Length: 424
Image (cartoon, rainbow, N blue to C red):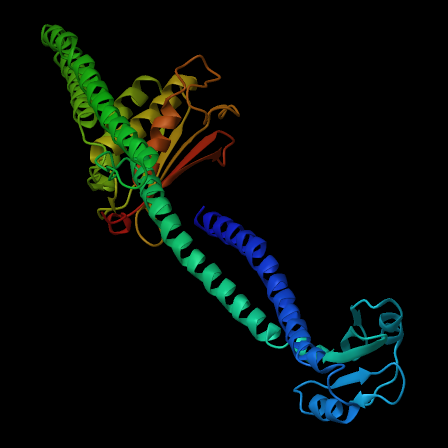
């Protein structure tokens, strides 16, 4: 936009200068010609009073002292002054007694007839072409320099004006990109033309309204999640009333796990959008969740193979988010494969830092639309894989879906290391 405004002003300035300087240049050339011809006529007019009052000798001496080469053609006899032939213009002037100005190769020929009694004298001079254009080229150069200076001045003024218009727009663009990166505290400074200031005020109002809506949404999610605590309390009381202590302990552990998940949902819902994710030990989190799901696997005759490192693996993802992602993947296995289907969970260190979490099963695999949020080929919500994908991407990693060596489904979750988190 800045370049376009500058080019527009430059084009307009050039058109105005052409409309002004071209006629002025032509006028200068015409004035120079008229001045040279007028000077020659003045010289000829100084001789007119001596025609008929001076003899030819005195007239010849007078003509020779003039600043221009002047020839006097008497009715008969030789030419007085500068030697020259009787041109058609001279003969025509002697015939009809009228003055002429004729363009020739040598310049501008001027003939003036003078009546002396019955005789007609003709005064002739030639203004050289150089005198007709004397100083014109220099004047044109001055005009060209003036025009160039005005164009450059116009470009400088246009650039400053365009900068004053474009700079606030660039600031608006930067603020909008910051808002897109979830920096909801970013605000534009209203400056520039009135229209741009109005846009800045509107953008600030929009950003504030987005903050309010997100805050309300987070509080609503937190409130809805908090309502689950009441049925969980009732479930825990029911578990405590069971006569089988082992069964009661298992149900209570499940209730505690659900309560932790509800607490994590409330905390995550009320977390500010620009907060940096915490780190977690992937080894500890995966071991805990696999142990939890192993109990259910035993009830459904599933073989669970695990491959976990002995050392901690720090990843750039909160423990709650990593646990939720793994629960979603394992929940998919239990929900969409028949009882007795084996599964495997492996956690390895990723080259360059981080970890790679792989979940394999011997089931039928995933449908083509499994990675699309809300799409499921098995009648479920279709959110499990998307939850895992978003958790991985939030920590700078990726999620890949493929086929396990045994022909079932494989989900590969790559998690970035803590040191690879982007700086604030």
